[in-house]
Image (cartoon, rainbow, N blue to C red; front, side):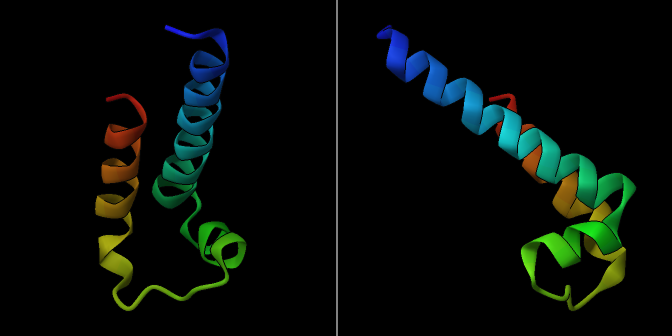
Length: 57
C-alpha cells in the first residue's frame, strides 16, 4: 500500500472515530459540530455506532 494512501486512511478513520464518539457520548456537541439537528434523539447511539463501525472497517 502506498504511504500517502495509508496516511489518508488513518486520517479518515480518526475523523470518523471522533464523530462516532461524539454521537455516542456527547450528542449535543455532535449536533453543534455538524450544524444539523437530528430528527430523533434516540437514534444518536445508532448513528454513533454506525460511524464507529465504518471507521474500523
